[in-house]
Structures are given as C-alpha cells and as structure tokens.
Length: 170
Image 1 (tube, rainbow, N blue to C red):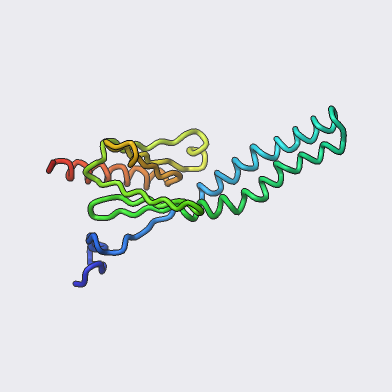
Image 2 (image 1 turned 90 degrees about the horizontal axis):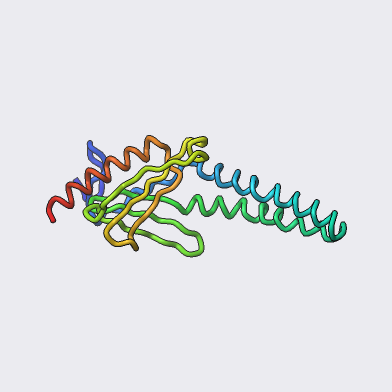
C-alpha cells in the first residue's frame, strides 16, 4: 500500500501525507450573518430616527453607514467562514483560518491538557457547539467554533484519548 492512500480503515496516518481538511458547518455562517443584521439594522433605524429628530433630516442619512456595514459584512463573513477548517493528523491537530492574515495552528496531542465543548444559548438554538483546546503553552490554545454538537463531542473524545495516549510516554 502506498503512503497516504486509503486502506480499509481509512486514511493512513503518515506525517508526510496531505491532511484531510474538514470545513465548518453552514449553520455558523447563518448565525454570524443573523447577528450582523440583528445588531446593525436596529442601530441604523435608531441613528436615523434620533438624528432626524434632534439634528435634522439631512443628518439622518448617517443611518446608511450601519446599512453599508451590513452590505459589506455579508460577503466578508462568507469568506471568513470558508477559511476555517481543521484536520486530524497522526500526531497533532491542525486548525487553519483567516482571509487576509492566514493563521495555521498546530496542536500536538501530547501537549493537550484540557478539551472543552461549549455551547451558548444562541449556538444551541442553531445546533452548534465549539471545541476549546488548552495546552501548557497559552500561545497554542485553539478553538474550533460552530461544529455540530455530535462532531464536537466526537472530536473532544478523540482528542482526549489521543492526548492521554501521547502524554503517557512522557
């Protein structure tokens, strides 16, 4: 069998093999876009009404600024959502994100101290959860937002298992 090819149990764990990247669920994009609209549209209405009443109708045009932020932010959130991905390799977890400033975090399994799954009320409403990884070095702490709860729990269990197995040899 060649290095990096798939066998009966899945991809071969080889450090030289190209990682299999997994993107985030579309629900995270919907959540972020909803929050963009929920915050900026009422702000635009409030700015328009208040400036129109107290300063003058011409100044009410400044209400277009938050609306322009919605129009600009909509595709930006889409590009940001597409940039988030993660990959499980034999010895570490890779997390990649960012459009302008691309950032890739490598978290070795043996260095993980704590793996948390969190889900706030808004995330729960959208059926999402986040995985937070804590290591001995604060610079390598990482988070994967917007996962499906089943995937977040699977990832937590797998990372905990791999972390215990890798740290046992230290």
